[in-house]
Image (cartoon, rainbow, N blue to C red; front, side, top):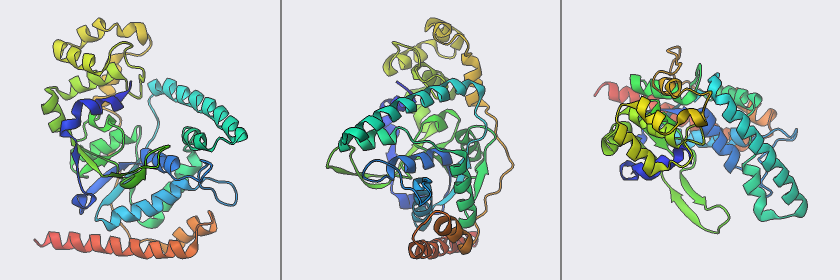
Length: 349
């Protein structure tokens, strides 16, 4: 099932907002999640991602550069948070995902050979990988753009949530719901995909708007504590136990958490946790969500873009169109100056 299903439980408190409503606010973006969305969405007709003349993937750089400038023009102040070392108990899930990608790669090769165009994109999107070199290029580009980023010691979403709890940023931004479990007071979704988007395999377009989810409202609506919300998530599946408890759906999980309250020992004994996860302690998972590794070693500072560095990365190294890039840089400069002026004016109010 997975944590994404929790959306069906909290729909009434998910607010659709306008991008402009976030103007002037600093948003901590889960960088890996953001880049993966571009790798999946920005593709050629055969489903393959954009590539430079050396065969290196550039979809993530294209999305990072142009989409981030658009966010800046709308008044947002993004700071990107990159994953560090994943916890040991995530290794099994990473292994499972890699095995799934390999199976999809085989299917992709077959439909490519058979020329079944309608299935190319579907399988191609499922085999995307974010490599260390791609992450390094993304960091270099952000640095050249004058946009801050933070290296998390562990999970990026955990670090972003910590920054939001401290009040250093207004909200976290991710398509996932883990940020709520990590205690982010607010989560913004759809930042990378706002606008008109084509429905997969259909000739239909829909308007996608940003969504704002506030943790306090979620907990109040569900009548749960944050600890109970984490327990519910573990029952239906998280990144660390993606299958959840077999036979326990969203509705049942919610009813069980309400029934057992804060007696988590009894709850996980009742669902026979040890049978399904003999080597994974639910207590360790709960503690990780409540108190993950984070750092205070970061500085949120927006700087003037280094035009020549951007040109070197995008045009000289990855074959982007120079005139388009230079035009975009001018837009970025105006957006950063407008933000600086706005901050100055607010200081005197």
